[in-house]
Amino acid sequence: MFIASFAQRFGALSAMGVFSAFLFAKKAKASEDQLHAIPMPWNHRYPWQAYDHASIRRGFFVYKNVCANCHSLSAIAYRHLINVCLTDEEAKAIAEDTTFPEGPNEEGEMYERPGKITDFFPKPYTNNEAARFANGGALPPDLSLIVKARPQAADYVFALLTGYRDPPAGIELREGLHYNPYFPGGALGMAQALMNDIVEYDDGTPANISQMAKDVTTFLCWTSEPEHDERKLFAMKTLALVALMIIPTLYLKRVKWSVLKSRKIRFF
Image (cartoon, rainbow, N blue to C red):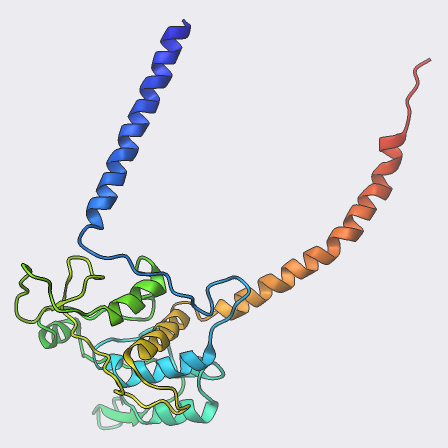
């Protein structure tokens, strides 16, 4: 009986081991064609840390001047930027620089109007087919949730933006593709978008590739989780309140239960 039970358990463990080895091998095989991003010391990484809003501001201008030419940001409106990286006047001015289709008017014609802070960011292309045609068949993804939608989150986005290299010996890419070891397969349709001094920061920060990649990644972290700072602040307040309530709770428990715990019952 004991031998039969041991054999059943050993067989089950063996099956689990084989299955785990299969999953590990499959995972390893899936990651053979790309490098893993190096973890970076982001300002918002730990539970007690908030976003670097100066970096969010710089990252917004990198997106506006570079990334917005191909990538949409459909979940963010201009009003969302107020008191995060722009003032009310700055958000209104930036929104008014963009025109939006409106109508029809009294004559049944469509017209364009200046943007308002309640408008969401416009898409760079009218439809997906136009986007694919302009990018050699590749569809530029929407960046609203790109950090949450990718493995290694912000580390991956930063590594991708700074990871363009010449293809190693023996690897030939077809026309229109670019080598980036952090992208699955290494062949990426997006060319390197960040170049030194391609934008000018209003705070005097040097606009090199790594700085711009860090800033726009921080901005995209915020677009993926705008409630990040408020959520962490609420959690810290909750934990502080719970910590304050521990002492009176323990005291009240001792007072209420001391009689029951110390009583002595006699049976006659």
